[in-house]
Amino acid sequence: MSESTNATYAAAGVDIEAGDEAVELLKPHAERASRPEVLGGVGGFAGLFSLKLDRWKEPVLASSTDGVGTKIAVAQALDKHDTVGIDLVAMVVDDLVVTGAEPLFLQDYIAVGKVVPKRIEALVGGIAEGCVQAGCALLGGETAEHPGLMGEHDYDLSATGVGVVEAADLLGPDRVRPGDVVVAMGSSGLHSNGYSLARHVLLEIARMPLEGHVEEFGRTLGEELLEPTRIYAKDCLALAAEAEVRTFAHVTGGGLEANLARVIPRGLVAQLSRDTWTPAPVFALVAQRGKVERAEMEKTFNMGVGMVAVLDAEDADRALAVLTARHVPAWVLGEVRAAEDSDGPRAVLSGDHPRF
Image (cartoon, rainbow, N blue to C red; front, side, top):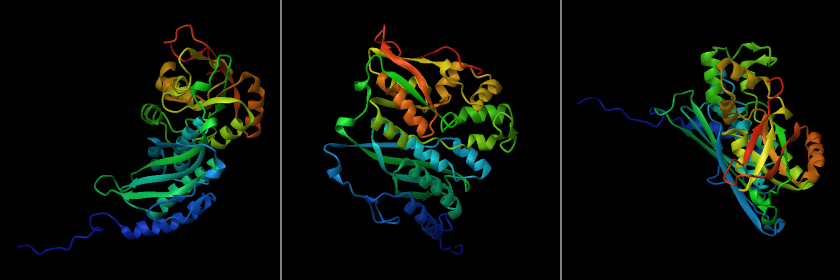
């Protein structure tokens, strides 16, 4: 009979001490991304958030869950992990604000092959920064170590956010009217969608190095691809407070037409003009190097429009002034009209982009 060995969790690949160290490193980040309603701190079994219900007559809770997608592969390739957390927050809170909800708190889930405390700290530092930009609290989360299932350098991120909106202020398709204008808010780049195609074209077909300088960008390819997603939550709430906003549409996977169509009611159509903006150079580069057709580009990427507001036409100038003052690129993208075919598309792009 062979000599027996004492199996341990550490020998199986799970380092509890490293996990404890990571929690201690995360506490300052969670303290920075907080709100007065947060009770307790990081490390408990559950996060606590006091709902001061006297602030609302009929509060409606909104929730959203999302991840970052394959943009993480770029962060891992460059060993730069402090920005993808911002992308994670953006993907969650900007879905919440579409309903008019104020983001209250977010909880993250980080799955890793091996806990490396400094890397976890960088990831959560980005998440905390995103929460600060969104005005919500980082109410803890979970870091799970999966040895044997994930490689030592692999990780994935997801999060759930909760927001609140007064029932009377709930935004949505039922508010949209013929004659409303559609105002676009510019994106900061690819945001966090379409990276499987972008990486395939730029890294595999074109064989461009992530560390290589790209003249059109004025920086390296890796820096362009890791540009954090713009977070619109506070901007949208400020706009809704100043103008008669009917609804918002967060432009993510599926592109501009498909996401805007989700908030346009049957019988109406949003007519949009491509000639109102020029997409950033990164979109042109992907299209050219991969010979990607326009229809494929527009259903995969945001093409330079990260968020859309549908609002009363009389408030168009006011909306542009509010967004400009908040340093958000914005322009009138189109208008809502009665549809000739009630079963037809609810958002239609026409024309051509200048210089694209």
